[in-house]
Length: 448
Image (tube, rainbow, N blue to C red; front, top):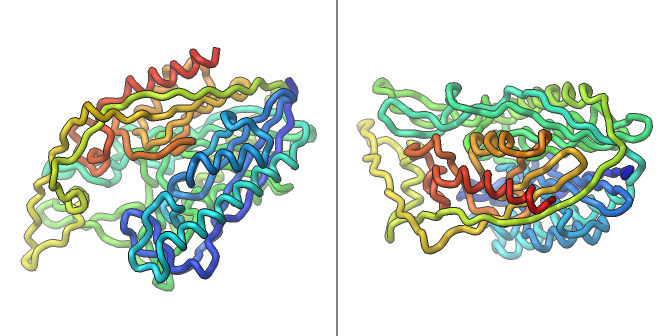
């Protein structure tokens, strides 16, 4: 079935009256805008049905049921064929799903509701414009590599695990691209997929000392590619399995004391935003290489989507445990004593919670010979690798932060015993690899 494709992007930056604007996890509020954040939409129609892929330059998706309905109605797409994700951008303001900073000058409810409505309207406009821009198209798929990520789980000299660059552990370098062009081979859209956190501007100050809203390095990448191809081409970036992957530069700096103890150190003001431009540009060049390398196209595309769920084992903190302090202890963020003495690193021991498994929705969007598998949570890179290896579709793309409510990290079985902060979430670490792989295979079986 021959296809038509259209794409669009719409700005969803907070208005000036919303600043200072909190993000999440207790981070200091953002007091200005560094660069715009967007929602991007790609709509594909094969004459019988339509699908939409939509991303948001946000840390997590806005309220999922409302957002999906808005996109479906605006683009004329069945709700089950709406495949949406957040770029997991840590520099974005939160929607009503996130608790905002306590020092905001207006109430959390008022500010977050206003921004949520900006995001809803942006999603509606992007989906509608992408549908209006539909024109005859063909597609191709290709992969390459981008070496901008690194595994971030590292064991320090004292035996504890923290966030730091670990070049010896696995980090999937695969950069996958779905390319859509028109009848004249002009780029309509490129859907990118890569595993790496967007965290360079998370708690970083710009040269003027202000913490700012930004689309982080994926925003740089998307804008770079769009400018390169022009003609309203859209570059839509999606996060792969990145639960243990950080940017190779700038996301964490340690000062090592003489005994090997690592203390987190802030970068000089403005540095993170320079690194953001550099890393995003490098990733864009890698993406352009893959895009230009795709020269074989198909004009026919079957479109199908299935949803299913799996139960994941859960854990909980013991009653009365101070998990906020535990988080600081894990990453050596608690200040040293007046004589340089370390705080006692007595970490919380989590408890299995078998009576309350977490029901995680998984999705599969099949676009011709390309399969997009959606997982709402932050799975480790090794789980994504195993999913692709087990998939019956050679062109399988694993996308995280998708379609459903987010709950947190899912460390893989090779990371058992690594007491990084990701190990203290609701999902029991090192216990979900095979469950998730089997959940994906169940999706493919249902698709048949």
